[in-house]
Amino acid sequence: MTGLWVCVAVLALASAFGLLRARRDGRLRVRTKDDAVRLSASELGTELGERATLVQFSTAFCQPCRATRRVLDEVAGMVAGVTHVEIDAEEKLDLVRRLEILRTPTVLVLDATGRVVRRAAGQPRRADVIAALGEAV
Image (cartoon, rainbow, N blue to C red; front, side):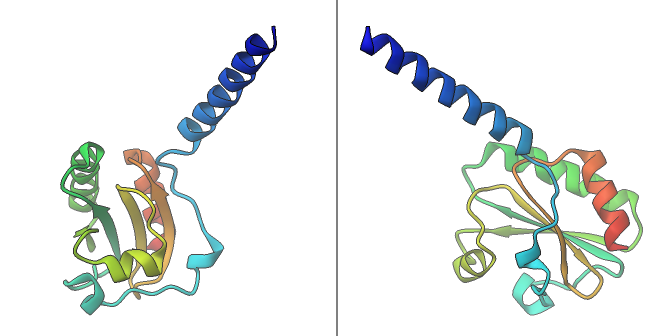
């Protein structure tokens, strides 16, 4: 009978973790630790956008990174002065460690000065990216 209770408890905890992860995945949030973080054009390897920059950290084996790339390219094409920059996380490990990137894709929304305004771990929705740009612009 004890084994049954252990099994039920493990299933309940795993379900709660899965629901929490699904709820938080891809949401663009403000992180207080990132408030002082600014990224320069030299760190990104390209110029910052005139109004905002969408920075995507990806890896070669990441399937959701491809869909995220399409969403961010589309949004950058819709909004004037916004640039999309994709960074290979494996090539910029020092930047990944400094920004505490734990998974790919991770998306940062930067304002015109390079300050991190929003951050999402996982694939963000198009509407969330557009709303985050409203704060950055």
